[in-house]
Length: 326
Ligand SMILES: [Zn+2]
Image 1 (cartoon, rainbow, N blue to C red):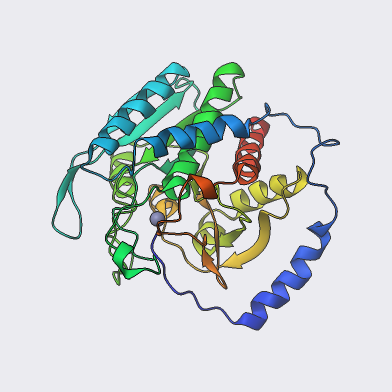
Image 2: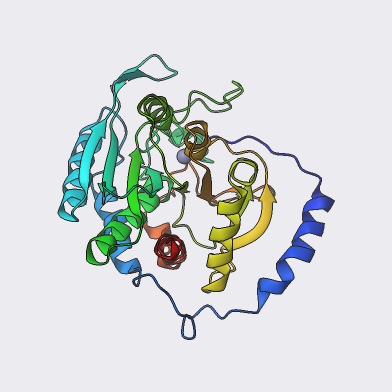
């Protein structure tokens, strides 16, 4: 994910927080004792094990053996859960002039169901830890446990649950490749050096007439003390989806994660999902005041800094959203 410094008047944000956040602060306890869920219980230990399995391959940087091996692992896992799995892509050039075989991984459940929900995350790892405070580290790859691994881990656990209990809607999971190989401080209007996998998918989706009721992209959903704010693209392109997901997150006990705080424009994969006509939101650890997840694009984005509570909050909220669809 690229960083744009997003400037909103501070007073306006604080004012919004002050009036919007209070009703949710103490209305729910974080244990789910009194809460009735229609979704199966999302197992955070299982999601964590799927994050670890990815990290164990090493950084899944495009063009490496770790990337290839991890693709095989993800395909076989998703097939084992009963999904119909396809790899989509073409030779794709990155901003630094290198060429890679793009591999988006598409996994569908109940393809005959006309009402579809799209859930996505990127599975590639950024090749450089350019935000690391130590300049000697800035050209090194990193484990990408949160920035990539967490969203995929949550998706694998959701797929495992869907195999056991079929929701009313068909589910399309897409794991994006080449999301995180962008140019730092990309000045192009749509930051087109990033999100190469979802850009390719969007072109294809438009050409084939792909339709889904809505989409949810997961990015950095496993860090400690995560706060998911509501970014401008999500609010403008899919306001009802933002409200539904944040309402459910708050209702089922995760109000500290799903904060009703607006944030600026983030060009993540949901931007391209919206371009393809699927009203889509981003669940991302980001806040205009503090920026992205604290270990974003550094050597410290590793397994030790993954928090199962955040995986649980994300996974249960998204699962509950899916199972409430009629
Ligand atoms: Zn990133």
